[in-house]
Image 1 (spheres, one colour):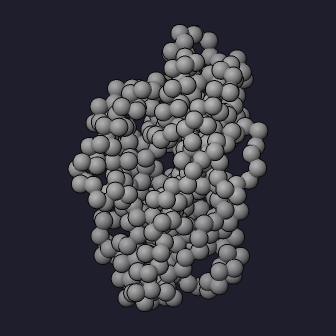
Image 2 (image 1 turned 90 degrees about the vertical axis):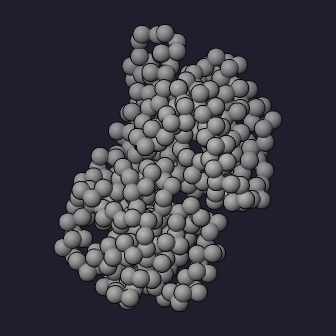
Length: 396
């Protein structure tokens, strides 16, 4: 089977959508599914590879990390791909990629799959604070309903996402397929090397956050919680690995509260080379986000054996579970601080939660999730075409 994927974002832009696309493309290939990706061109990006088509894009002043593909150039790029090179179209994002992808699908009569990565109704207040929240949600929900109902199948990364989309009035079939992770990659890391590189003493307890430093990540609550925890455990260190539009304001908050010696910003880390070492150098993982679609970093941290202190909101509620290596907390800095202190003081509890976290993470392997997506591709392709023989069995 051959899949044409279209996305408004991909590496070198680092986020969950880019990671999800890369993971599935890599793991679908052994199952006999090849993919061609159409995505934006970025300044100073690596050279184009054979299975990617990069489209000219423009700078977004309100979102400098992202790019907007030029719509006419995108349509020309898609039209130049022979229709016999792909069996279905998989749209990954709801901007230019969506409209060009739906237009192409109608023209070539191919089935279309949409992955709904982000509950945009929950993010409107972050990027359009001038818009009344109820109006913003209403507009975002209506747009999501219209877009999803244009596809033949919707992929939702979590059960909560599926139920939310149903409440929007989406009637298209929805398949829940979380993004998996390469478990083995995160099971091993060099704790000592990372600590030496960042001048962290061997005995210091490290709480780690990995992710975009963005307004929707609820990081002010984490800083407040950590400030409270320091009153009891003054030698704790919080490491924040990531970049994003809120970094300057979070750094200013840390400086204003006199926490510069206790909070370390280390920027983006390479997911294959540096991030496993970072996880293994930490003692616990902290996660304050309220708007996660899934929260892949939670699974990565658990695979490395880190107990999690986090808020079980939205997609993260299917990962931050009391019986699976986590200490769930409310959206309250005192609650989070108390659990950070509890883990910092109790070596036995950290070890127990670490074992449970590792066991839970093993159920989120990228190979198993890719198999689920392959099955979804089969259903939508042969349900529409009315064929009875599996194309996967033909290509395998």
